[in-house]
Length: 382
Image (cartoon, rainbow, N blue to C red):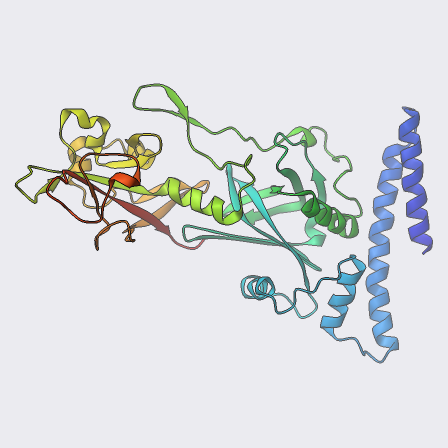
């Protein structure tokens, strides 16, 4: 109680001195004192748990100690035996004393890519899990390894960027990082992270960075550009954060961007032979492996391979063994997407290469001059 009162007094003094705008006031020293006392207070709380357990003939089990710490954090909702708790135990193998407190949807930036996934906040660790197109990204670190947690200036009103700074470099998605930038989707999630940061690091999201300049860095929202068939620069499609999509919608959008469409044209109306598009008005479709947006365009994965028309046309599968996806170059395999919109081999048929699915059928008719089907990449576990 003495420490708590002293810490509150330091915090009040800090606010009063800030309002005075006195350059000689020891504001940073008061901030540091507040953080140090919070750490000492947390350590004493842990000791009290152990002492109390000893005094009560060790009546508290490991699980009960974890529940007590969760209550000290101010959370009363229990996640034990929930679907999220079972997933947490399967992925991160917590100790008996570790209790999962909150699970928050988020984006985590790594290698200029924002991984959609879940942030697991427990009484011992911060963990993250993402699975997109078979690529699983797992990360965990103890609260003691986290130096600071700070809210960054936001470019988009729909998301809240938070930076976790580590005491020593850690591994994330095969890269060594000294910090992670995380985007949260609502103020309630922001409040939860603030509460954890205050308890475990001694300072919440709204303090100042210990290193100058780091608070000004924000995750970019701009998408890279590439040239369309008309030669004009166009932005590549990226996640639409402004619409505040759900995690499943983000994953679906990433998978849609990675899909490769195979196009074929019937050689003549009297034959069942199919080949890569070959008519003059087919334009860039003669490259066979395409992406579909507002128009057909050579898929970026294929474009980077710089294949000839002959090489692209002769390939029976997407001629790509590795792609740059989720911020890294990864080995991949390709599988045909078979659903109700196509036949048993995934083909859709039409008179010409229309964009809308409305003009395509799952049966080959007399006037089916063209056909198309989707290929989806699969990746190994990271």
